[in-house]
Length: 242
Ligand code: SF4
Image 1 (spheres, rainbow, N blue to C red):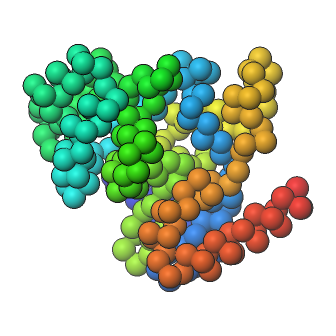
Image 2: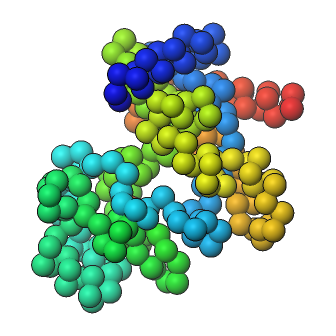
């Protein structure tokens, strides 16, 4: 985060501190974590002009994960890529020539791993993990798995939040998703009467934290059960109240 984002984040925490729950070192931003999302990624390209994997992978891959991804990349390419793409992999590997290890190179303006698989476009790392039984959490770039959540180490505490209009000024996700994607805005989806009801179905929206339970376990360790219990109760209470 740059200085401005750090300032915005601190200001946000001060403003919403009373609505946050402290679990160990982690500050659970309850209102944000209960915001509704529908990550209907399979249908994303059918209803949006561009998906979040187009235009490049959002954040560089950390070194440990980069080594694993490099080791598995040949198997991913052999299993799911066209012959042309496999030749590209053999000749150029997976990293950007300029930035090197950790920055996935682009192919035709998109993340190299974004491929057409069985007639749909999606992440070939994810598809490979599902088909081969590999651990998707270990293999898929962390930032790609994180959305719609956000984890910010503030030194004395770790803020666990999600993308909302108020967190967008300091969140890595910015305002794009709120403005252009149905996954992040049930209001936009409700207004989109022209869409097939099965795409980003209103019944599929659920609280942000529920889209990434493994992350909560990884972040909170033995406190995860407590946090999930609390979030679950709050979520049910707010559903009853609204
Ligand atoms: S690694 Fe996968 S999820 Fe991440 S940008 Fe590339 S295709 Fe998309």
